[in-house]
Image: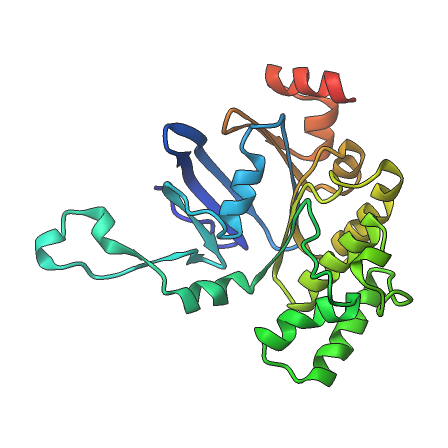
Amino acid sequence: MDPPNPKALLSVRNVHKAFGQLHVLKDVSLDVMPGEVWVLLGPSGSGKSTLLRCMGELEEVSAGAIFLDGQLLGIEEVTPPAWKFWDRSAHLQKLPGAKRAEQRRAMGMVFQRFNLFPHMTACENVMCALRLVKKWDKEKAKAEALKQLEKVGLQDRVDHYPAQLSGGQQQRVAIARALAMDPELMLFDEPTSALDPELVGEVLAVMKELAEGGMTMVVVTHEIGFAKEVADRIAFMDEGQIVEVGNAEQVLSNPQHPRTKEFLSKVL
C-alpha cells in the first residue's frame, strides 16, 4: 500500500470495497489538500457515493486505507504476537467505538435526504449533536445553532419544524447541523438530488460560500455548473475506478479519457 501524503488532510490509498461478489471500488487513491474542493463525477453505479461513505467511516474498506491528518481511519496498527509477525493483517485492528466516533467528529456529512428529526425545530435539530456529543449546555448549544442557521440564511426559520420548511430549507438545516460540530472536512453526497429544480440554487449557494471560506470539501454531484465554478479538482469515476483527474477546466472542457468524453457529451 502506498504511504499517505503528509501534506494532505485526507489521503485515500489503494482502496477496494466489495459487497459480497460485487466489487464496487477498485484500487482508488486520491489526496485532498487543506482548503481544496473535490468533486466526484460519474454515472450512477460508478462508486462515487460508496467512496464518500468510506471516507466518512459509514462503510469499512475491504482493502487499502484512508488517512485523515495522517491518522488511519477506523483502524490502528498494533504489535502482533511474535508467531504472527509475518501476517500483515495481524498488525491492524479496528479502533474501539469511542475512538471511531471521535474521528468521525472531524468530518461533517450531508446526505441526499435531510434526516431531520420531525418533532424538533430547526434550532433544536442543530443543537441536538452539540448537546449529546459535545455535552454543551443548552444556552451555549442554542447560541451556536443560531449562528450556524444564520450562516445558511435561515435566521427567520429557527423555530420552524421540518414539515414547515421547503426541501431546500431542510437541506440547509442539515448543512448547519454538520457545520455546528466544527468539522475539518465536509462530505456532500448528492445534496441537491432530492430537491425540486427551483430549490437547488439556494443549497449550492451555501456550498459555494463554504468553499470561498476555505472549507475542505468532497462533493458527489451531477451539478456540472457547480463543479465548474467551485471545484479545485474533479475526479471522474467509472466502474469503481478513477479514470481521470484534473482541475475543472481540464476535465470539463478538455477531457482526455473516452469515458469522460462520452459522459460529458450527454450531460452538457
